[in-house]
Amino acid sequence: MAVTPVGEADVTTTRRDVDEEVTIAVCPDGPLLVRGPALIVDADGLPVPRRRATVALCRCGRTSIAPYCDGAHKRRGAAAAAATS
Ligand code: FES
Image 1 (cartoon, rainbow, N blue to C red):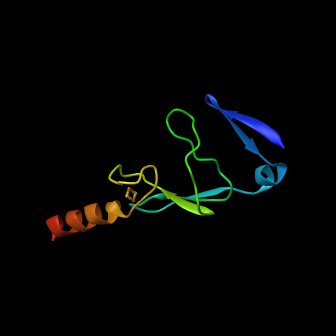
Image 2: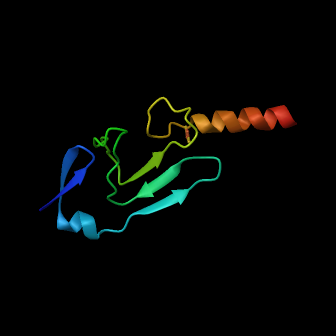
């Protein structure tokens, strides 16, 4: 096991975790999709609980479950589309 300092927190991980690939996909007008064993931390460097292998990080700031996307960005897009039609 290796210990990786993240901000003020120490996070323990395994060699297997480090060797797995992480990809981050940008969704147009939506979240960042993070696939793989990336460690998500808050503004203080503390790990944010993660229950899925792929998570969506909010980019719009409208989510109620930060830092994760809850789909609120879709409502903004729908409102913008309605305003221009
Ligand atoms: S990107 Fe989906 S709620 Fe912000």
